[in-house]
Amino acid sequence: MDLNDVEILLVEDSPEDAEMTIRTLRKKNLANKLVHVEDGAAALDFLFNRGEYAGRTGHGRPKLILLDIKMPKIDGIEVLRQVKANEATKMIPVVMMTSSNEDKDIVASYQFGVNSYVVKPVNFDDFSKAIGELGLYWLITNRGID
Image (cartoon, rainbow, N blue to C red; front, side, top):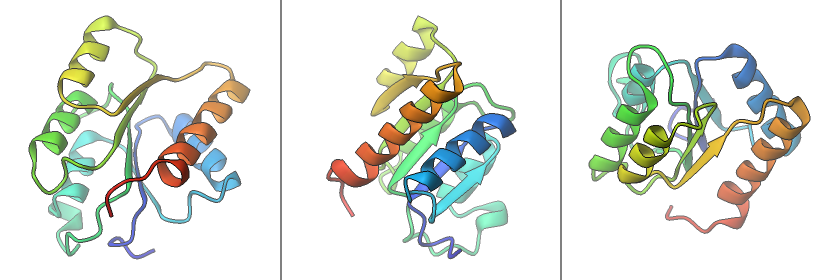
C-alpha cells in the first residue's frame, strides 16, 4: 500500500484489539487503506514523516485516527495533544478508542480536541458493532475536509 494514500491510522498496542478492529473494518470494506502502528511514537513518526516514515511526502494524511490511550513509549493523550497542536494535522478526526472509562482520561481527551471518545466494549460482538459503526460514520457519513 502507498503510505501517502492512507484513510485510517490505527494506533493500538493490543494485537487482539488491533486484529478485531481490522477484521471488522475489512468486513465493512473500510480497511483497504489502513495502517496499524503499535505505539504513540510510531504514530507521531507516521504523521510527521519521521524515523521509519521519513520517506512519506506528507500529503497523504489519514482521514481518521483511531487512537488508544494506554500505550508504550508515548501515550494516546500526548499523541492527541501533538496532532491537534500542529497546523498540518489538527483537522484530522481523532477517535479515542480505549478501555479507560476514567474521568481524567475523558476530560483530558476533550481538552486536547478529541472528536469522539469510545470505551471499547468487552464483548466481541459489541466491540465489532461499535468499530463498524465508527468506521462507517467517520469515513462514509461524516463530511470531512480532504
